[in-house]
Image 1 (tube, rainbow, N blue to C red):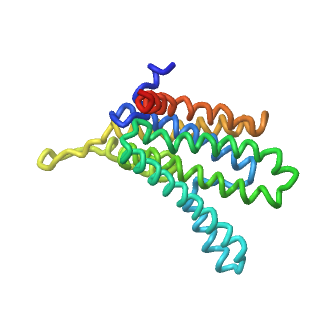
Image 2: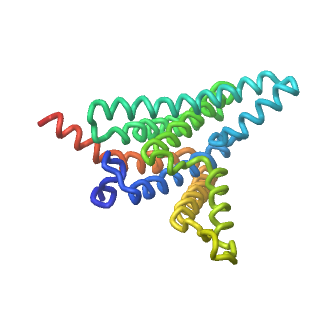
Image 3: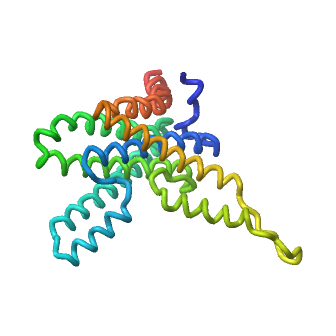
Length: 245
């Protein structure tokens, strides 16, 4: 299994490795977002919607809801900050697992989310807000991972931006170049394929998450966490061997 995922989270990167990792993380993000909605009744990757809801709530005088939205926003921000801190610390320590560390943390957070499942039903007033904040933290953590790895070429939760870029490239693709006096308008087909793949990965992950949470419940987080562990484990083992040598 390891040879199949060799290089996916290593320091030495290639565009192909970035794309493969981006597709997997898009799937995980879609599953977590859709499954999380069934669990807590809120999408946690959509910061645009959360900020818009905060504005509406403040105008309507729903200060409690506005404060809840602000908490979600801060949790997403803290997740992204945590990724930056862990990756930069790992790079300064010259760890091959620098990019794996946030994914390992995300896998633990997903398992915690799964463990909260039974408690949510019994203690919804206490655990439901905590779970929403945890999911927002996970989304910020993961989006920052692939953003930092790919130098902002790939994002896994910002579907609005991906669909916008797809529309731009499709517009170029169907554009009719009537004059040869000016440079022709050409679509970037590679970018179109990459962004379409990321959107599809997010959609398929959403279907998996929705089906899983609808039929088997919070145990759906276990294979997602295991997938992140699998992607992260090889660089981590390499670091442990090097330190032990």
